[in-house]
Length: 429
Ligand code: HSE
Image 1 (cartoon, rainbow, N blue to C red):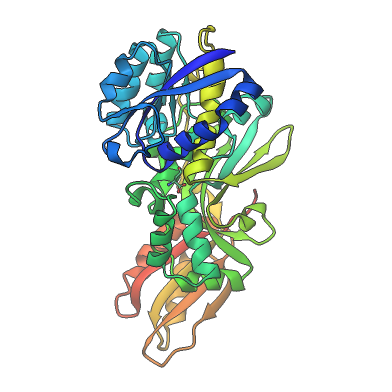
Image 2: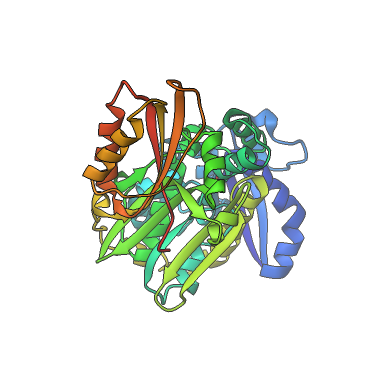
């Protein structure tokens, strides 16, 4: 048996979920793993919200945890990358192993933090930072490490997948679906990070680092959130045989990395199309294992806490051994990036136009000028001279040419009534 004392910073949805799991599983964990976990202290802005059955010391004093010589592991569950950065730095300097669910922290500061951890012979666990309960971090670092990856992509945000699913199956408005996701504890404290795609950008950059053995930065990710998706886009896509999903993806092409976060039309026969509600999935294509997908709960108290607890056990058992695990991450070179605008893709385009003679000809002329060929088209029936939607699926064309053609089309103020919506189609994966 090995004792492991922990201090938890942050007692929100995941923090309380973790406390419940430790309360209910302490004996089973001891039996299965030989680790005896005790929560010694909790620091939170709202100590009154910590349930009465918790026996640990509860305060709003993070320093008390950092300075407590009996604490082995500091678990950070507050999110964001300002206070959390100070916590991890002082925790490591004070000899604590650090476990976090914080993707912003790892994506933005991982490299310098791994350096700091190594210089103190300590380790950092962040399994919960990507895709909640899905065991993807250790899988990439261990089980799949013999493969060359050509792509890694997925549905990496439970909130947005829940919203899109509810808009489809229960015909909820975007606002109602978001509110429900927040009530269920899926959303970030600032939901802009979820709906604008930033959360996924942090996660896909972490996955890309591990899959391609390089250091990536979210500045190089093309990011589009879900706020421009309307009910009609969801139903149009379904009629055409696709489901709209917020997909984070990273590809390796000729040694260069291409990363994006975009609402994407996923064909029904792709496994990612059937990942619904708050479920997440990571899909990869590799040299020796072919394609594969891991699916699981991507958000919420217990799914996220289960990965945090797995890290506490894994790193708790390793504490005291000479850590080498972070070494390889720190030796990764900086990524080289490809040019997204030069890539080819098919697209879903929705134009809001006035229904009058010559409109379609005008749109088609501009698309043609940029070598964008129409594969199919449908128009909502409307009254003459009233606004209507024209939806087009295109053949393969350069991403940069879509941007230029849409700019030109949107400048036709006398016929185009709202900015054009454009989402790529998922293919070649
Ligand atoms: N807000 C995140 C999500 C939580 O919805 O997926 C887990 O990172």
